[in-house]
Structures are given as structure tokens and as C-alpha cells.
Length: 125
Image (tube, rainbow, N blue to C red; front, side, top):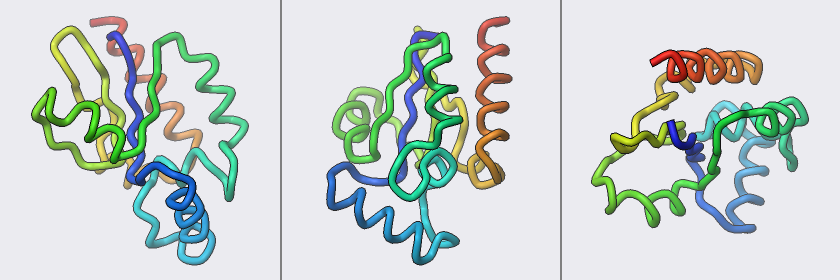
């Protein structure tokens, strides 16, 4: 595996970030980005997530949905559901953690464990 690409179900920009923060605070049950919800507090990245990211032994990229679509969609011709974590391999982009899987994750530790376990599978393959 060459890289993990984390794609938020949110668009880039300061105004969008502010609106997302307000949405999470006012009506968290209807917020559409589970990756954001799990890894960020009201304004900042959660410390446990930041520490985990720093210790990952694989290159990572973090993109908002609009950034990903601009950079990757036409190149690979795939349509992904967001949020999603993709693995960039010599075969192209593969779903590493799907939107459906995100919906079943209820806390940050579960997400971290899932990523660690999947990385082991990729290393063994």
C-alpha cells in the first residue's frame, strides 16, 4: 500500500468548517460526516486521533469531498460514498473503510482499532 486517503463528507473552506461545527453542536444526530464526528471536537482535532495519525507508518492524505472530487474522480472514474478511507495501491484506489462501516463505528477507539487491523491485513498480503 502506498497511501491512505481519508475523505471527509464535508467541503473545504473556512465558512464550511464553521457551518459544520455549528451543525455538530446544534444537531449532531443529523450530521453527515462520521469521520469528522469521530476525529474532531467542536473546533480542533482530538488529541488521541492526532497522536494516532502521527504514529502511522503509512503515508496519509486528508481531503474534503470537493478536494477529492477535483483531484481524483476523473482520474480513477470511481464514485465513492463519503466519508471513506481509501487505500492507494499499485492497482489504484481501494475502499479501506466504507461509509457503511463508518455508520457502525460509535467511538474513536473503534475507528483506530479498525484502521490498525486493516493495516495488518495489507502488510500480510
